[in-house]
Length: 548
Image (tube, rainbow, N blue to C red; front, side, top):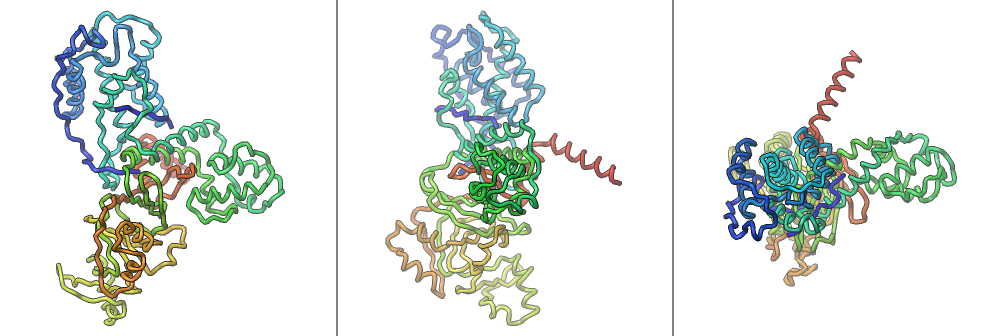
């Protein structure tokens, strides 16, 4: 196994428990002796147990320590008789880079860095492992495990943020063992990071450099809307610089002349924000371009944290829904083969973030109206209009919990349209067609009660059944026009992931941003940047006092 630490400066698929179970104990490798050992520096098992006790490590962290040192018969990992091992220098650089980029530097971390800084300035041979060196050895191992967790699995518990896709599990002991065996070399191999993380992480580096320039003046909409090809103005140069920052325009084009390249760049920028593509400086585009660099960096950091929760994309077919993007993507062997617009739940009926496996397609479906909708909407409508059910092709087919069981019959007016796609879940969420096609022309499409409406449901059905010779396109069309349900079991079930990303790099290499439709970014920021949130509240309080 090789580790990949790609530019740790600045979707998607998990199947294991959020809480990692304590590792099984590894038996000590007594075949390693002072004669054949990598280093003659050894720790004492009693000293390790004392360290575990003093540091109050939990069971999982303690077992990681025991497993790692047992497997190497308590040889030091970070030092040899010649001084600092190469892997120590690699960890030091990677960790310092990662922490500084994320604004995460505690007093304990600074103290550890100071010790390493001191050792880096010395070229000293180590004759024996004294108490101080042993303590530093154990601290570095503990810090490595913490670093790996933060960098690859994330600091925040996803469940606290209504993210119910199981969290990725990291084998920190195996990763440390690999780092030590390779003497810190070959750190750009396979890593537990998905490709979206890698590309967005590079953007964090670029935006950190932009932030250092401290030049981000607001663009004036009124002035920009008056301009046309051939005009010259200082505001044009400012617009070009801003578009270049987002990657929509060549940074070499920094003149104050309005050229056709600006219209092309404006179209790209509008795509990056998920806005209507006009090639003109619209109010929504200028508002997006004016958001402060610091806020964009925070948005990138928030989404990097989410991406740490998920592993490398698996082979085969995968369906990925991104709620803020209002889009469904289909991947095959890690390459996107299809995408389509979607409608998601409104803020009061949010689409849940979770994963499961698509197993069934239902043509000409009944819509079994959820009890919440029966109680809140259907029953009041019936009280106002006794013919409501028949007018809406609905019928009562039973009773449960004091409420009638109501369903809508298959047909052109059915709320699920002509087909639905099922992946078992307790949230009663699925993908489906809709008779309300006009909603797909809207830029922001949060209109449903939680389920996900598809702009191209027939295309998805054909794709999922294309390897089933019994289901031709003609048969699918016919099944979608029936007055009775037809259930089809998908021969090769497909993983489905309902996700929430407001920043990512697309397949064309463009950085994308979307609005925080459900407020999940704001809640994440409170957990990731608590000091910043406190400071902002203090500023708001002071501003309020001044205006009173």
